[in-house]
Amino acid sequence: MSDAERRRRAEDRRRIAVLHKTRLHAVEKDLSPITGAAAVSLVAVLTRESWTATGRQMPEYSRSQVPIRFAPRGSA
Image (cartoon, rainbow, N blue to C red; front, side):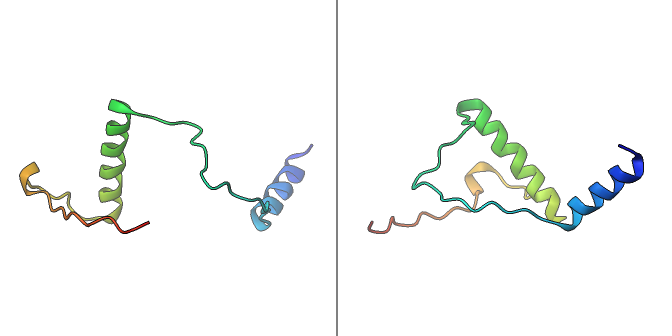
């Protein structure tokens, strides 16, 4: 396949999106579950990346000053 043909196929793929209709299960299986220290580490990384993406400064406060609120659980 020539470079020109490859470029044309790549351009066609950029213009056309293919969607596959499917049904979701009541509970989707987690294909790559993580737990423990790896999960905590992932949350820390994602939190830093999220704050960085906002362009705002990371908040600086002690753990005892973390702004949290407990909400009562609704009836199921």
